[in-house]
Image (cartoon, rainbow, N blue to C red; front, side, top):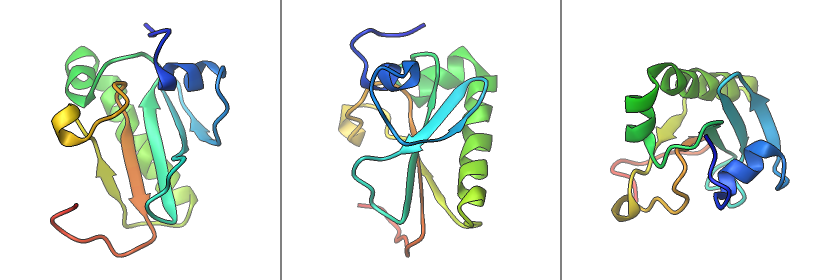
Length: 114
């Protein structure tokens, strides 16, 4: 399932350019256009769901592939320590309503975040 108006669906389809760093059966990973760390990649499912909770409910195997893709991307760039972030809903600062996981590494990360 795709949404013709969704930015990330367009990237997955190849209609909008992005720096793709990994592709999987159910996921695509690409560099964030506004990186917040030396490594800042977004892992998105190929199928459109509006947020992480919806993806987990719809297809646990896709959600699992998001996590394994994130690990693969971080490892390929030489990082064992990294942060995964899912913003779910406008109140959590989600701005693109297609599930995406931020993979962030390469700088000191504080807690609590922003």
